[in-house]
Structure formats: C-alpha cells, structure tokens
Length: 357
Image 1 (tube, rainbow, N blue to C red):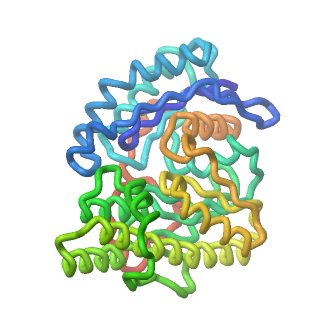
Image 2: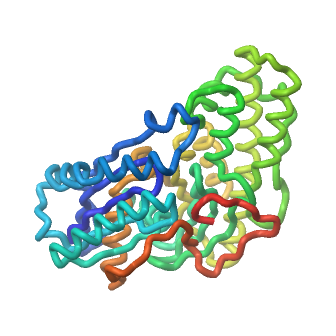
C-alpha cells in the first residue's frame, strides 16, 4: 500500500510517500518539509495569512519532489491523505484542496486526517508499537495526554486549560527578546542559567486530574522581568533556567497522574510516547525518561524530524485508516478545530482560542 501525505496545518509545507506492508511494517520513501521560519521570524510568531500564501506557492513543487524522490507515479498510489485539521484554516484549505484534486484526477481514495491522530500514530510508523499506549503531545498549539487504544479510538486524559507548552516557551522567549522560534532559544539560554535563583510556581502540582496550566507561570516570568529591567545576559539565562525547571517539574507531575489514570482505566500501557516540537527539548526528554522509569514503562520518542509536523506522519495515518476502511468524500470540509477524542469536554476555566482544543 502506497499513500501520499500532505501537511499544511501551520508553518511547515510538507509532503511524503509512505509504503505500508500487509504485516503492518512501514517504509518512508520520501519526506519533504519546507519550514517557513524565516518568513515568520520578523513577526515573532506565525502569521496565518503569510503561512497560507506560502503553502499556495510551495505545495505543488513539494508534492512533485516527494513523488519524484519516492519513485512512485500517481497511478500507483493506494490513497491520498491530507491533514484536514485542526490548524490555521487557510493552510488546511490549501492542503486538503490539493489532495482532493489529486484524488479526483487519479480516481484515488481520499483520507482526511486529523493532524493530532497523525502524531498519535507516528510510533507505529517508527517503532511498530502495538496498542494501547499513552501519548504526551506537546507543541506550539497542543498539550495533551491521550490514551491511544486503536485507530480512531482515543481518550483524552489531560489537556491544557490555557497556553500550550510550546506556545508558553515562545512567549517567554519573546518577553526576553530572544529570536523566533523561541523554544530552542530558551533551552539554550537555560543551559548556562541558575534554575534556583527565581522561585517560580509549579502550576497544577498535586491535582488529581492530568490537566496542564502555564499561563500563571508565564505571568510570573513577566513580573520578574519587570522587576529587574534592564536585563543582563545572566538574568536572561537564569530566568530561562527557572522557567524550564518549573515546566519540567509540572510536566513530570502531570504525566505521572496521566499514566495512573491510564492504568486505572485501560491497564498497563505498552509505552509512554512523546511527540510534538517540544519533545526535541533535551531537558524535557530527560524528565520524560524519569517519568517512564517510575511508571515501569518504555519511553518512545520518534526522531526529531518525525516529532514536528511532516508529511510522513500524515501519509502513515492515512494508510492506517485506509486499512481500517476509513475513507472520505470530496465534500469533506477543512476544520480549524477538531478534537481527537470527540467525547472530550473542555476543562473548567478553559479559555484557549488556539486551533485544536
């Protein structure tokens, strides 16, 4: 089975071809990703209109490159998959419309993929992981703990009540005058900082639910910045180190609760999986290793190129759904918001307006 996958939900324009064998094994034949970091850097964040325009300009060429690199012609495709949401609606429209056109012209099944499901299924692409397992998804737009029980079968155990984790890192970086994207800059500065200088709060620590909250921590950092301006380089490093240490402690606590809830409801998970751009942070990876060890479960983190947004994860999710007989019509709409767990309810106090919650 050969599937073309298209990803345009945010600021990466991506396409890939993935082969799925009858035994469930996988092979990535191509995976082309074009980041728009340079286009958005002057604004300190993703500008939806710029992202959508870039997808229009880039996508046809990236699809052509992915097909050429794979050595597969369109008539050989078993399906065409596109991220149909959640995400910035302009970009989602570009990717889904392109996939529809390819599916129509070549009479190929269309699979409209939930971007979050693609992240959730990636460890089955990289590690042939069996169900069930526990997913920690942390990116600029999402922070969730999800029980992955099967294709199309997901239960959200915890989510953020305000800022997503990657979003909080980027906002702290912006407050400190660090370049975009901010997450790697905060991690780099924290390496030479004193994490004990500032007594930042550890949000949600000890709560029986598995939800996250980072808005108060972000405000605490802002308050310290206001007290010590002008900032010296060591101040910036210490603030980053203190902020990151608070995130690590809160994350370990929240994941510990999430794994406990998983165990109570679904039995022992086969692994704790981390995905999303934040999983590239080495300090967070170390914290996740400790959490997994305490829970006596394996930790699986796909390679960085498959943690962040890419076409291979969309193609693989499309293949998984195609095997399950789950295809879509050409009338399938793009979605700015699309919960992975349709029965999930927003937590009390929830006010986040970013896509996907």
